Length: 218
Image (cartoon, rainbow, N blue to C red; front, side, top):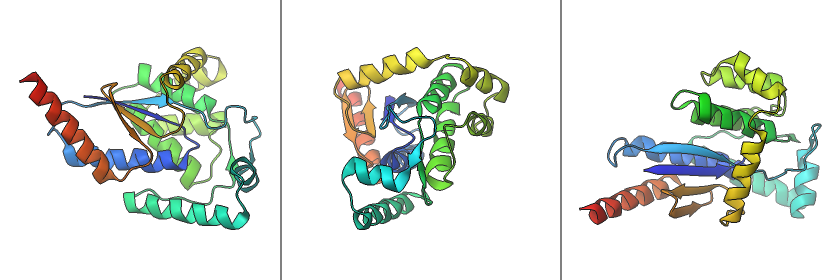
């Protein structure tokens, strides 16, 4: 079974969805056979400058939210995250995530099994939990090393333009097939699960898809 997770590091619901999917996969174990998870790029704020913007101001203007509405939304997101085991901190800034996506693409191409997902988890925690600048090359290199990737190679990727075109091509591909909001979890390029669903929803869907595939193949 192949699972593609289309998401952005800047998306809080992606942090919830990724954590919930991980929990579902832990519970499933080897019950449905081998599972490959591929992290795919999507940018919520592709025109964000390198200096980023104040989060409260930017999100209020982008979504037309009052300060009170933004506070309520953040509390709801934090509650949902806690239910799945993800801790949200106070995110004060919105940063550009393109270099993070380049690094994730590199991890998927050159990294050992599991490194790409480990890096994605580290990025989500740094951005949403620890209020760190994941547009900073130094932060990105540190997180890559934490995920078991070679720091020197990570810095080499970030200092050049490697994987930039590959990321843009991947972004275009997912948009062209109809993915316009994230997280979007696509199983075997046929089944779509949208949004930051609870882990129980992911588990039920994956078991059902696996069972249907087994019936069709028997």
